[in-house]
Image (tube, rainbow, N blue to C red; front, side, top):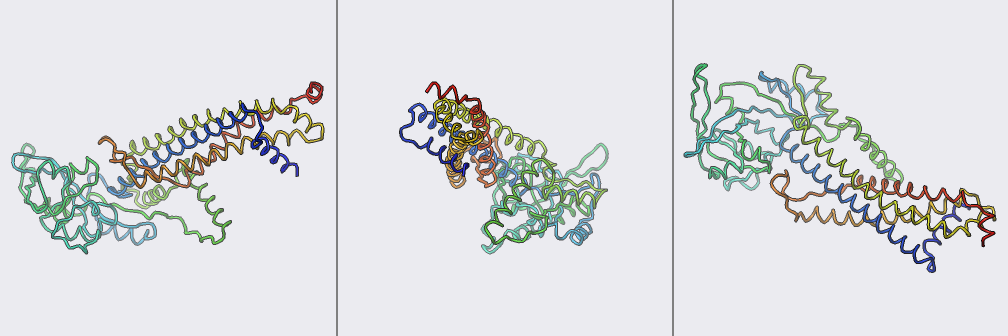
Length: 447
């Protein structure tokens, strides 16, 4: 009963039409400041989350989740593939193998050094997205899918080159190029053998290091040219989730509990190494102790760390803006408490506990903070959704993406809302606790 009374009084203080104009102005300033702060914080996280996820998807699409290699040695591709499929079929989505060699492309008076990558055309589409990035020639039928385009294009003496390479050398699909293969004759001499390939396709992944430095041919063709067997590395793509599938909750309360548990696991994963990729790599390392097993994140540690650091730093910096906005609440409530000293004294004289008087002003602050935060989050989500569907802001070539990315996640909304409410509660609690120092006798005597 007393709790509902505190809520009612707090609501009356906020909505009373004849309240002091300075108090009314301060309430609007607090509301606007918190709304803008939460909106800025949410938009910042939406954009940094977009950068992180888009770049992760791009790098993960080009590179497989896990690479298994033995530096200086060749691997028996078929034996490793069969063993891993048999033991970890539930963990693995796809397995492929590749070998990489350095060659020289001779085009007229221009020579370019490229990495020539031999791939298993039948399984490459299960571990990378290179088949989705190919500019298909007119001779390929329309019913060809991404899983069959590589075996169709990469026949004997066929090659797929990058968009930048094709642009620099003036190549198009169907033309022929000469590839110079180094063949050591002795320790002091190096011979070059010529091999002619026809361009079966051109890929464009949007990364300079691939579009200008990489070309693909069939793995058997590469091994026959260099007179080798096996592969340099076996690459593996993992299933998105390796945890046991939970039973879907049908009730609304059950869905809420399931979401809260999932959110808690995501928050804990920020401070631990329990994501599926890390767990999968650990399992494969334990199974293959004599081989080098690395994830795609370990191949690009600087990029992954910089994206994560940028996300956390921007969150903390913009959170300070929200904190400054919440500090206006301290001034507001100090003014409100000073103005309502007479009411507070009467409440205490009538027997209302100091704790419930304290709750009146706590509720005032939380109402302002909660509504302002929800308004700010709503505006940020609308802007974020619009940026997702309309990527109109172009970025310079220094970035890995061409347009400003944005990704709106429910988890981000919940975290920003909780952080804003927490900051607002702290800013409310500081002045509200001053109500216990009001002397009833002095106030009533003055009145």
